Image (cartoon, rainbow, N blue to C red; front, side, top):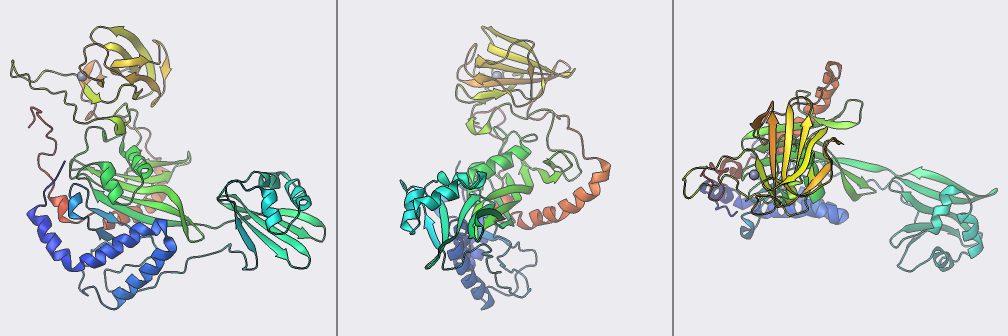
Length: 489
Ligand SMILES: [Zn+2]
């Protein structure tokens, strides 16, 4: 959905114009950090030098976050304004604090320059690599058969790297291979013969922030904030117990998160866990902090309640749901809204349907109205119903777990297109599955609250710092919940 630049946004844009070039440079640096960290760090040094030389006005407001506003080109006005977080080591001062230079990138396990580093090419064998560095097949045989760890050296893949330490006179001294992401394997020639040892590689965890405002889709906004689709799914999974990401996301919804990036020897490896996140959906804000209460890390609201609930908000994957399916059709003849006891999720036939909570299947059958349908009893007072399925994977009497696939979306029975009709009944009364208060799982024990809060407070403070403060947020559409020819409009 296209949004027009509002007067407030235009004013903000004009005010920010003098900084536009600098911002563009900064945004490019932030975007480039992952792909070419060394180059980008060099660019950051230039930027920092520029800041020190006074390119920026000296009277920046104190509250300016330590992140960079990404100015999107006019052609992507329907994408999100997004803020791109810069890793910890990069100072972009917005206050009067002295400019500190980026810390040097640690290169902890670099081998000395007289080692020969070889990267495996397609079709290359270890034997050929040995031959090319002047080592014979006899040595390779002894290395590979040294122990369990070195046996893996026989299986190499293109892109693997090996380093050899070879003395011009005495020959082979050592070999270094990547055992896994976090360790080196060394094979060394000593007076007693060959031996192997494992050495840890230093992984560098950087804490970064990202945030964005949704104007077309969550995925677009997240992309604008520099998040991978995988990170976006993880963000949605944290809040998916409270927010129906299939149907309830609106223009103006916004998010902020603090997460880890895993770096090794100056290179970005992958994203680590989300440490804290905030999601504002239709004006309601949810916050989550990652904490290990003894059963592995999980997410908790700042008051210690778990984000996890006894029921999923939506019993199918939101990425496959078309949100323009409108169940509340205004009837052209009766001029009334047809009563509807559930939520309809338009989704392709075959999309897996999950049990919303633990329970027992009380009906798994077919009739002309419901098509293939399943009813699940949860505890004593909640029943969930799933209609118009293309197939059923469970039978009456089966126990099901939350998230278990019980069938698939279809259009059997009275249905005009493939969709899931989903009902949520409490004590026999239909409730809106998208808004009903869902029972919580167990809250954090009182004796853990202190350590939870001391871990959580600085993370929440970081979220405050990156929460977007641009005009886009204020230009939120008032009638964001209006859809097509819905009677609500
Ligand atoms: Zn329906």
